[in-house]
Image (cartoon, rainbow over all chains, first blue to last red; front, top):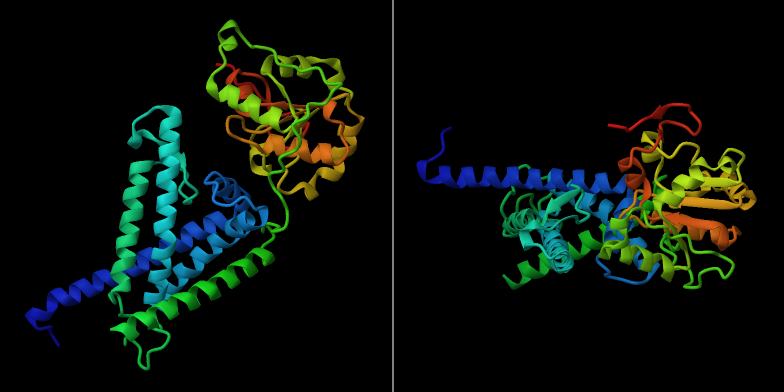
Length: 169
Length: 209
């Protein structure tokens, strides 16, 4: 019944990965729904990045992204297509972090203040935040996603991989 | 290994496609959803109405040295063909007897929650992101008025611009429309009267220290 001493660290690590998956999933659901409830606020915040100039594209991003985040969060929480979802999140988080960093640089120049003193609402769902805190937070989210992408957090998954024959494969 | 990577990439693509489809469907079903085809930030024209007399009154000698933010605000409104009005002039409009009989109308371009928390007494609510709720009521009043002052939170807030352009596009002559750039934050900061709840609720909060 008891685990072999050599397998204990691995078990603890796997438990930590499952907790990280749940935490990441819950965070994305919370942030996504918070933005989805006030889409026009998120639209205004999305506009500040000047990513696209077409109103249709801007509206589509602002309308879809919050629900998309909540969807990815639900997949992680229930443990469905975990590695594919983690890769998708990395694909969203990396360019978004770059956009936030670029916007912070522009604000730093405009306000003539130190980089870490730049504070603004990046549209992440947490209101105004200091840029260095935000970049650190996003780095952690990217690292956790990469960890899940590597195959960690397989326990208590409804279907860890869509194409596997057995759960957990 | 190679096939494993390919499997993960395919899985990610499925998640992305299904997620995007469901997200857009959720937006359509949500009562708060965005209308994808609408331009929420109309640029307007850069023509200030010819008959309009610019109302840009400095609030104090110190204010004559406009900050870069104030310059940006003025430039932004000018680019949209809108007239800016400063707080001192808004205060004059507010105490003008014409404000009592509807010849001067105040329009609050913030959302309902912010409006309920506090607004300029007698101001009408017009959230430009959900104009269908109030435009029918506010538009005839603005058309009949001699002057219309539109405001939002102030600072970077462009909702007052959007609401003013919405009114102008709906038929309110541009010469009547004024945007109070300082917005509600500026109004409150100067301890001017604030009404909470519904319009003409009679609940006035004095912000005097």
